[in-house]
Length: 138
Image 1 (cartoon, one colour):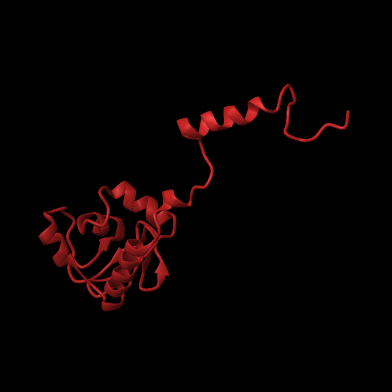
Image 2: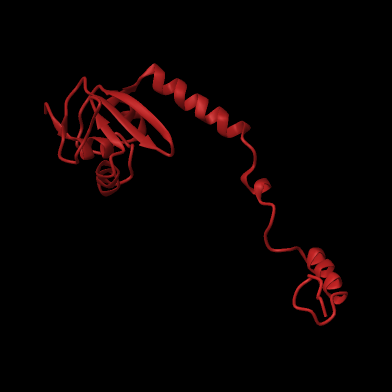
């Protein structure tokens, strides 16, 4: 076997769980072969460079072997070799995620807590029958 479809290779190398998911990401332009956007039927051969973008991280690998069977992960990892730049970029992204702020802390407004709701109700009692807190000119 000299050549293999890129969607089959990505599936057998365990980048995607199914060939359908691989084909969808290829269709969305998230996979490049030798620097050019790929189609699902594009054939790869040993020595090609494949870039796969997932979760804002691009993995760039060099094809070392071809297999149309999906085997265990240690066997699948022998089908490719990740480039040094790709490894460094993934480590940097992981470190950035580790030191990033917790997303939930950025929420300033939302549903009030039970205590906050009681405080709102107490504040509204002083408003009387008015619809808003603005001053009426009556």
